[in-house]
Length: 133
Image (tube, rainbow, N blue to C red; front, side, top):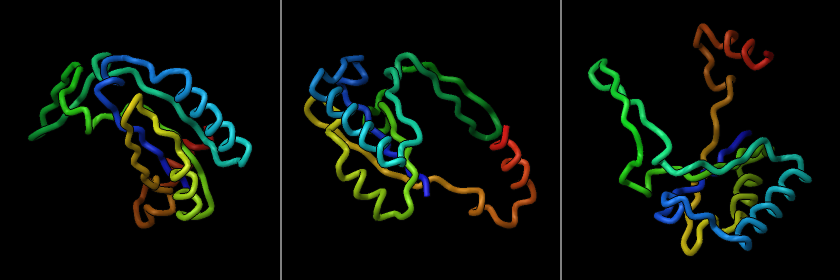
């Protein structure tokens, strides 16, 4: 089972402020522990939304909007991708995640779909072949 730990943006992260050495050290220690346990798949921080863009589709039309975006609580500042045997194991790892913010922080944890979840779709094998590339 794969889970994404989503680090929510804060006004500070959107301003491009780094969280400080103490938070950086705590994140490094946490990710080292995940790696030693064999559950870490990937993880990284994201630049502020001012350096990004959104593509939206409405009524069949595509619109591209440059950042920054106003609703900080809806933005992602970083992520950690883990693979565990159970939901409970993922919960225990997420519970130990250090506060990612300068003062306040928030994470969200979501399970990723696996190809087995798409039984009945005709092109599942195409996606399985992509994984082999």
